[in-house]
Each structure stands twice: as structure tokens, then as C-alpha cells.
Amino acid sequence: MRKPIIVAISLFAILLLAADSFAGLKRVPRRYNVTEFYGGLSEPVGSYDRIGPLDPFTDERGRVYDIDATDLYDNTWHAGLTLGQLRNRNMYYGIGFQYTRVKPKNPVVTEEVVWTFLNDPEAHQIDFTATFNYLFTHIESAPIAPFVGITGTAGFTLVKFPGLDNESSLGTSIAVNGGMELKFWKDSQSGAFATFVPQTSYQFLNSGDRPMHWNIGAGLKYYFR
Image (cartoon, rainbow, N blue to C red):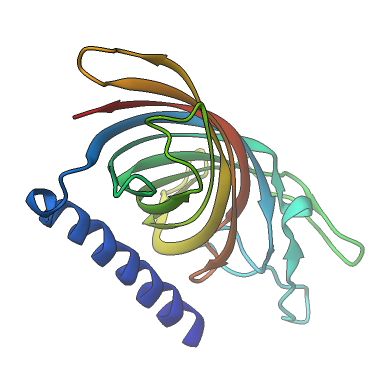
């Protein structure tokens, strides 16, 4: 039970930081509002004894197996939208939504046992996200801004088996993320500008058997006052 509690507390702390950023708009004169669209590839990481909320993998003796993510899930993709603010020139806070397509393998082949599903399962993750990034340069005046940060997600995993009832479960995860912003356009009159953002994130902590991923992709950010 300790692991879900740690995830929940960490996510709550991130949400407080994001909430504070929006509550204190009038106290920070140098700020930009930010809209970001992003997407990319998702590689499964970790190990699991089940797919989402389904029953655990057991053999004929009832022994439960932990299966490496690369044996259980195929590589897939993710996409999302984030609304945020750049405050004090270096600190970015954002909240948004992310969809991740999850692709369980069928059959699941390990060194010990082979599991075959009667119907090919499909799974989906739909999440609320909260992100904090620290930019190492001032992107409003510099062409490039490397960054590092942390992202918390909270949402549900939906597992579908054709001909059977759908199963869903709530879960949370924490990821470290990094990348750089490359400015490619700026409006000299309004001060608005846009950046191209190659980025990666690695989910290292989750609740339950929620699938985790190493996400590699890119986004487009639009900054405006």
C-alpha cells in the first residue's frame, strides 16, 4: 500500500504547485500563457502481474508471475494537450489531458509460461496531467531553452476484450521529463511566440498495475500574454 500512497502524495504536491501558479496571476508581472499540443512514441517499461484490472497471471499451481513490460505490451503512441503558464521567465506550470494507446500482446510468451487470450485485448489510458518544468534559459529572449521537470498523471486504464465486459481501473503515475524548446516564430508587436519542443519522459512510479511508458516525442507551444 505504500507505493500508491507515495504516488498520490507526489501528484497532490504537483497539483498544488500548478494551482498556486494560476491563483497568483496578479502577483507575477512577467508571465506568459502557454498552449501545447504534443505526441509521439511510447515504449512500455516496468514489470506487471496482470493487464490493467484483469486477474493476475497464474500457472496451474496458482503461482503469480511478474512479466517484463516488453514481453507483455507492444510499443505504441501517445498524444496530449496542455494549458499552462511561464512564470518568472524560467518556471513552467501546466495542466492538461493525455491519451495513450496501450497494446497488450497475444499470446504473452515468457521463459516459463505462455498465456493466450481467446480474444485480442485492447487497452487505453486517459489521464489528467500536471507538469512542472524548469527552463535553463529565458525562452522569450533566447532561441533555445533546455529544460527538466516532473509530470504527474491521474486517470483510468480501460481494457476491452471483444465479446466480454469492459474493465477499467483508476491509477496514478509520476514521470521525469526533459528536452529543449526551439523558438521558430515571434510577433514583434504582441510579444507572442511559438516553439518546437523535442522531449522525453520516463514514468518511474505508478499505482497498482497501471502500464508505464518511456515517451519520446515532440510538441508545439504557443506563448501569449
